[in-house]
Amino acid sequence: MFQDIEVRRIPETGDFVFNGVINFTETVHSPWKMTVNMNKCLSNANMNTCTPFFSTEVKDVCSKLPQENQMWTKFIKDIKMKRNCPVGPEAYYITDMGSEPSDMKYFPLDNSFYTVTVTGFSKGKEIYCMYVTFQTKLA
Image (cartoon, rainbow, N blue to C red; front, side, top):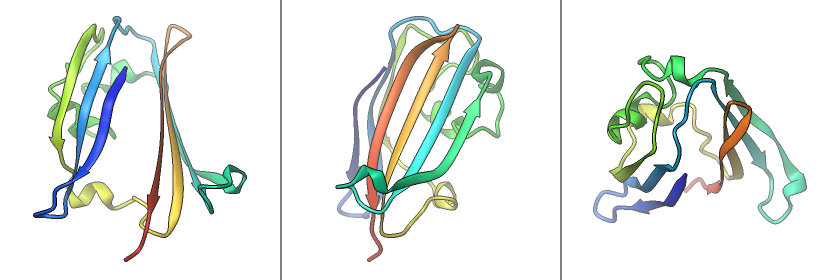
C-alpha cells in the first residue's frame, strides 16, 4: 500500500516534505479499523530500550473519513483522496507535502529514537502495515 515514501529536506528553507505513493490495490470497505502504536527508545541499537509513547485505535475509519477533526484530515485532502468508503483500488500521490507548525505541537522534539507502526484491517483481514523509525535531535 505505501510505496517509495521519502522525507526530503529543502535546503533553501530547511523545511521537510514528504513524497511517495499510497496504493490501494483492492477495495477497502467498512468495517475498516486502524491502529497506531508509537514507541520511544533510548537507543536505536537496542530495541529492548523502547517503551510505549502513544497508541490509538480507530474502530470505524469509514465513518470518520468525512469528518474534519481527524488526524488524517489535512493529509487526505492534500492527496485528494476520496473521503468516504469504499476506497480503492486507486493510487494517491504525495508530492512535496509539507507540514504546518501546528502539526508539530504534540510531536516529541528531544534526543530520542522512535518507532511507529500503523496497521489497517478490513473485515478482520490485515490490509496494510507500515513500520517507520526516526530519530529526533536537539540542535
